Length: 68
Image (cartoon, rainbow, N blue to C red; front, side, top):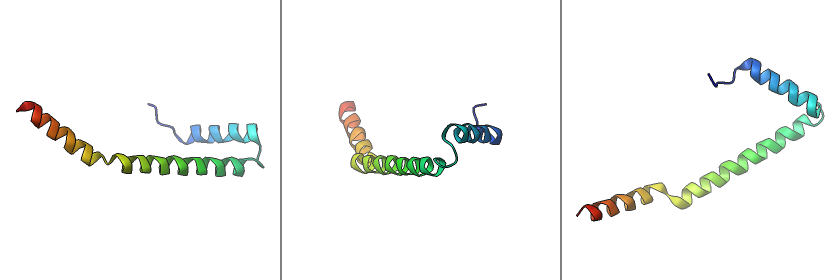
């Protein structure tokens, strides 16, 4: 339950096609592609800034200090 199958994808595509028309579909797809790329880029930049391995190491050190 919760998985999107082929019939649902086709139905969504048909609704989008009816709402926006065939001429605007490529434009919408390009816009969505750009948005996804920007989101991934921002996510990767945030991960690089945080560098979770350093944060984990600091937390473990703090816990060890509190235990002693």
